[in-house]
Amino acid sequence: MIQRTIPRQINLARNITRAAEQQIKQKTGMKVTLLVCPDNQETKTPEQMLDVVAAALSMHSSAYRVRSRERAYVDLRFICAYLLRNYFPSITLQQISVFFGGQDHTSIMNGLARTGMLLAVGDEKFTHKYEKALKSVNKWLKNEESGYVSAISA
Image 1: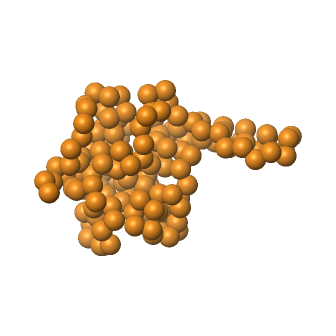
Image 2: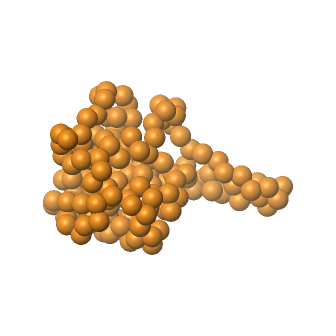
């Protein structure tokens, strides 16, 4: 079973934040960006999370930038984009695309949609990878494990 309560709570917080941003703009004319970050995530960065996911999937941290359509690379990008979107709600699609070698933001949108679809239909291989990555990210966020090192040596 996939643990989906935390991403749902983050999505709810993201929606509340966007509504608050719109209200502030309507009432004051000022554009503001509100960030939603758990207390223990203040020092965590998206780049660090990329390393955690790569290590969890036994891939090198530079694998995100590999221009390949091999399933291992595609799954890595899909899973990480999905997790970035859920755990770093203020990050934009364009910013996510930069992590993956400058893909277009619509490629990220497609990856997010395909991730949701693969999880919804229960694709066995993909779901296993996602659950493994999610478990590692949750441990990383809770500081239960320290110092992830890439599973592939240079």
